[in-house]
Length: 331
Image (cartoon, rainbow, N blue to C red; front, side):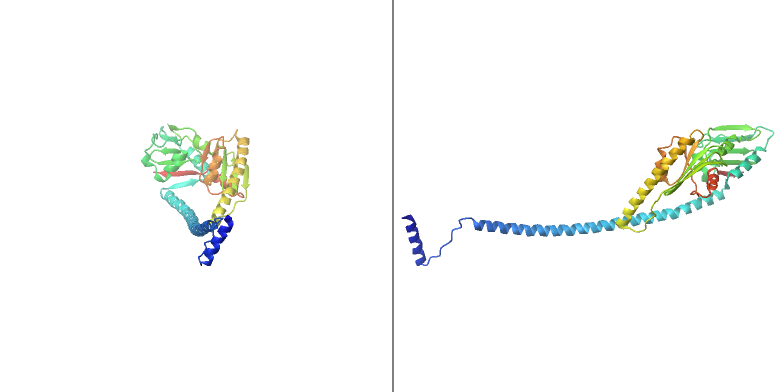
């Protein structure tokens, strides 16, 4: 039989001392080689993964350093700007003083108008010219632009200017806190002071917008406060640390400021709706970000005014500053 023959042949090989190679019936060797290849590839992948982790850690560390440096730079820049602002104002004040410019509060302004009203000429040579903002100085008839001190040109272009001239005696340049309604020029025996008196009698809604502490005031004129509302909401103080901590803090602070702006906007809108029949202007003062948030909600003419921060305990001081005029006397 066949099996007997195969057994006999195998037995003969064994007796002859021949080595017998086992038969790989299930392909075990091939699978072992494949496993070895996969294990080697796994080692390579693990090594690549460790290298990528190290690279990512280095990038994150570098990003943290860059962010920290950026935040610190912003902090230093803000501090520098805050320090420079008073210096600029001081320099501006020195320039105004040097050119003979003064600020007249409402009481001083009324007294000046009384004195000007008492002046009379025998001829129609007393000049009163009123300029409105936005037209520049090209339309002036009473004097040349070069005669106007440079230190007051910017303010005059924003709010207009009154030119009162008594020939051979003096010339007054008066910048009002609120723009004049119309442009005019008269030559008469007396000064035309109606536009200046009208400024002191103009009803204004003032918004002094500051993060966390703002004030809304309705002034009927330079002497009477009709309403005053203080808006206070919690806003985080400035943060001096750098890195991710400061970035998160500033994001939370910006959110606080936005909420304060929303609350302020809502109250201003209610005040405008209530007093719209009598208010001529809405005067906006304070932080630019909050003022910008208010611009889209107002239905009355707006003017931007530069004022110190309000004192809720002394609103009369804010009222006085609101109606203060800038006066320059020329020979």
